[in-house]
Image (cartoon, rainbow, N blue to C red; front, top):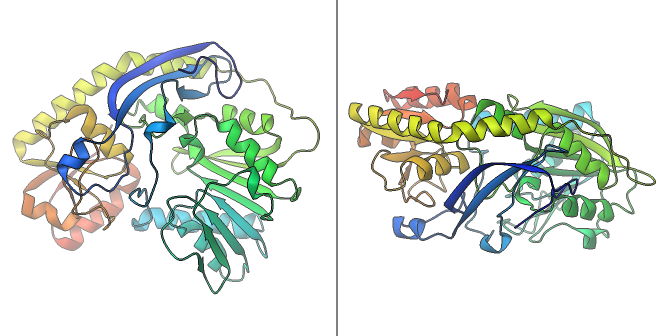
Length: 389
């Protein structure tokens, strides 16, 4: 069990959330309900550092995880999210001048975002993606894209990089400074490289008391201040951190720093207070959602909309035996016809809701409300969408 903060090494922390026997994976594609229920489990023991505000699972065991071809956290099947990625690519090319560059993406997934940066009109970029779970050709885009099925680290210094992009990876790493130091070491021959990282904002989660945004895969969660501190300690100069995606994510921009790392002091009092308040309300929130689902169930079948980590977490928390929730809706065709990790709930397409008699669907993320309403309208299904607030 971790006793010191992985970012600032402080021993002072606030324990605020404990859950036993949670599935360690939320995004595995599972063929049968039996396999889904037999998945490896672990403990959540979330603490907030009182000195820098970093939040981590001190009971995390990376040996329980197995990222491979059956892991699928693809979000780009959603037109809303794909448009968000288009805006992000546009920001990098148009606002940040990422042109005629060799872009390295750390944790590229299926390579969707890297392809956007390389295919952006007039950008003339090349790209190398690193991810052990990557599925697809080793080379693509007329030779402009190369994919390597391995982790990116100090041993990749022979891969020159003008730009390093890392989206939604660092929250999966129990020692985030090790990842950042490895990236810094890989850039020893690229002192002018620019670095862009995206990760969830834990302050947003705590402030809004989101029940399903703490789960096993995300062992390391940052505030803007603690993310800046981690980068500074790893040898980067942080140019800025901003909130994006409706405040849910942090976007950091940095460059390799010269000389000894420097870091500004952090006031973590607000984060510690938010963590305590979250912990005090967590049991009540779980019971409120169980009661809410029971009430909705009396009106007809109930679905959760979103078979990613959020949907998997809520289902495992309030309906582990599959008595309240009929199914999980997801637009990712690779997940449809499969089953939710931990509980075994069936995952279906939006078109299947009418056949199953679903009257109400709980939205796992309100950002997708308009898109989901359009999907329902297109298939002629009357279904109430329930927000999480």
